[in-house]
Image (cartoon, rainbow, N blue to C red; front, side, top):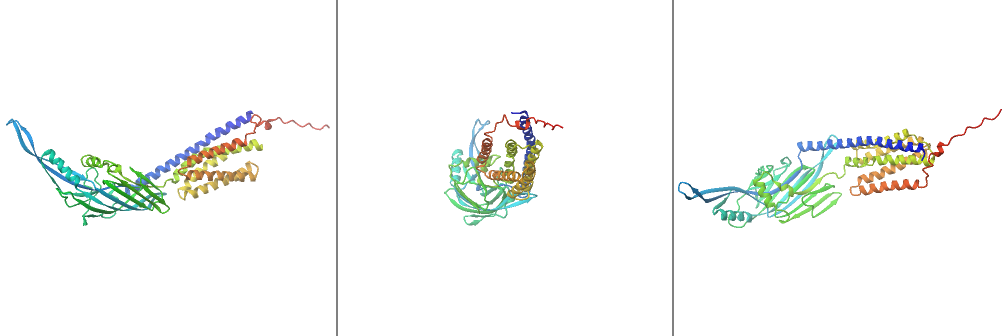
Length: 460
C-alpha cells in the first residue's frame, strides 16, 4: 500500500472521529429536550391531576372488647379481677368485586409538548359478607373471654389523587343511597371518599350488595386494585397504544384502530390481601397499590425516542458515505479532497438537528421527509461537482435517500429494530467487500504517483 493511500485512510479515520463530536452534541440536545418534556409532564400533573390508582371499596369497622384480667395486687398479695378494654378497627374486603372502567382520552398541551390525559367512568359492583367480622369477633372473645361490640361502619374508596374526582360518587348499599364525604378514613392513605353504612349483623352471617359509580380524571396511567376475594376487572378506551402494567397482565385483550379492551380476573389465591389490610390499619403504609392492574396511556415510540434511535446510526451513515467516496476514488480514479469529505460529513450530521427541531412542530414522519430531502438535495448538488458528473451526484443522492428510508423503517419498528439494523449493517459490509474483492490494495494509488517524464523539446 502506498504512502499516499495510507495517509488518506488515516485522514478519513481522524475526520470520522471529529464528526462524531457533533453527533454526540446532538444526542445531548435530545436528552435535554426529553428533560424539558418530563418537566412539563410534572408541571401539568401538579396543576391538573396525576396518575390514578383506585382502591376499594372497603368497609372500616371500629370494635371495642370488654374483658376481665387478673392483676397482681401487692397489698392483698393476690390476683384481683380488673375490667379491661381493647379497641381497634377491622378492614373488611369485598367477597366479590366487578369493576368496569370506560376511559376517554385527550391531550393537554404546554408549549410544544403534549401530554395524554383521560376521563374515566368507573362502575364497581359486588358483595360484602360479614363472615370475616364474625370470625374476628369469635377469635377475640375466646382469647380474652370477653364481649366484643362493633361501632359505626364506613364504606371507603381510596384514590391516589383526589383532584381527579370530577363529581360526587353515587354509592348504593342494598339499594340505599349513601351520603359520600371526602377522605378515606385511613391514616396511612387519606385521599379518597367515604360514607356511613348500616351495621352488619353481629350474630348471623349476612351478605350485602353494593354499587359505586364515579368519574375520575387523570393522566398517563390508570390502575384499579382488585381488593375482593374474587375480582373481575374490565377496561375499555379509545387509546390505541396501551402499555398494560401492574401486578398482573390481562387475561385477554383486543387492540383495534378504535382503541383497546382488556379483562383481568383474580382469586383469593393470587395474593394475601388480608395481611395488607391489617398493615394498612396499623402501620404507616398502605400497599394495596402494589397489587393494582391497569394501563399506561403513552406513545410507544415518540419523536425523541425515534430521533435518539436514528442518531445512533449517524456514525454508520458517515462511514458508509466515506466508503462510497473512497470506492469512487479507487475504481473511477477520481481525486476527492479530505475537505470535501468533511463537507459531506457535516451535511449528514446536520440531518439529525433538522430532524429534532422540525419534529417538535410537525409530525415525525413529515419532519423526517423534509430533513431527508434537504440533506440529500444539498449533497446531490454538491457531489455533482465533486464527482464531476450530474448523473453520479443524482445517483448518490438517490442511494442516500433509499438508505434514509430504510433507517426510518428501522426506527419506527418496536419489535424488529435491532434485527433490521443488524441486517442493514451486514448488507453494507457485504456490498463493500464484493465491490472491492478484486482490488489490489498494494497497487492502489501507484498510478497517480508514477513520475511524469518531461517531453523533449524539438531541435532547432
